[in-house]
Image 1 (cartoon, rainbow, N blue to C red):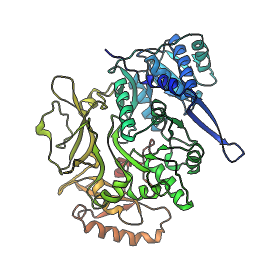
Image 2: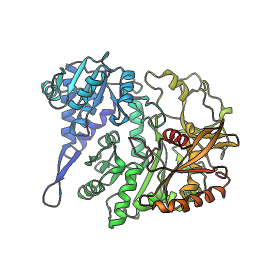
Image 3: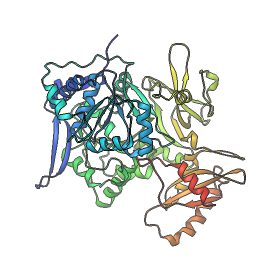
Image 4: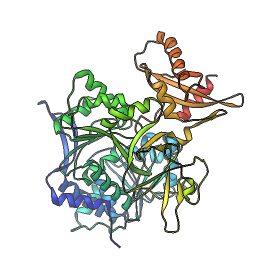
Length: 551
């Protein structure tokens, strides 16, 4: 069998462009109108990750060992991640912002044997008892206090004594990492990634977006930043709170794009919105950007238009569709959205996410909340009919770690060759041109006595109002019946005195459309609860509880 190790991209790039910066961390102003920064070249990153890999193996962190990595975005984070991949160990990635309760549950399920973290992470681990029954090896990135184990500095010293380190010859189906979902629709689940899955993702991203070695990337989500060195790009990591992308200081994004002449940026819709508003207000231009990639939730057309004004006419914002379990599935550019599909979206037809990629099979199936054991073509729906989106392809992950019931709900076996379909948990449809349209999460649909309402189409009708920042459809049980309710977050600065008029106008908007004419209750909410990872996915479950409490 041919070995596949996702870390193999790094030594290949180190040989091809050794002195090119792989990772840059701006640290502030240099006092001369520029930015001061730390960096690793590709050669340095490869050598440092080799030393760490060799040192980790010497203390027992080797092939197959599940290892929690809780380190802030830094040069150490990149070196450690590539080192873990090189050893064949299985890094476990969790979002610290998911909350203490969810963190504890996730780490208990992951059953890690090793824990690599900054001192703050170790203190939390001890106080909360995270993964205490399974942990054997502890590594501290920074000063170690009373908890034992070793330090990254000592690990590096051990590894530097090893000559000619060779990475593990892992196989395509071998587990490479466990990535926990954001938990925006329930308790986070550990998605099992193989080296083959990662390799397919890297190749898809390279091909779809025509990314070339030597480009400069500004990623604002740490795990996406790992793709940059694998693609031969320089990753410039901005100064920001990665748990609050929607509250970023726009200048901390704009200045490094300008200074380092970034060609690519990844940002959540919330971040793109915030930076775009600042750019529009201050006449900012970002001519070096070739592409902006935004994912995590649908990006409103007005946000795309606003940010696009800062870019050149040839550049574009692309919005890939996918999930932690299967990414990417489809992609569409801002030019097509602005010129074409936004008008259908505003009319309640859903959000177009583009044509599925050629090497993926995407089908729409009848909606059910039950497991589906075996695939049959009778499950599929014709073009134009809303159902659950399913995907079959090399970048679809096979299972959740230690979640057999969740795996059964999300996967459909196809024949006896081990192939399967992944149920995205989203509802949507394929149009006659083969484009995929998304209509919201399956779990968020509202089933009333008069029929089923889907979130994105219904919300779009109310989002057409100039004073509406965003809206959310929820179902509230009253008198034994489910009542559809629209929660509305108004644009910042909307006078409270205007709410009465806006309320009346929203009722009129809803009554004028067949999709929403049965929605009679509209509630204003000061600020929607959103996910930590992207600050863009609305926690409709929390809004439903809030709405029910409003009588």
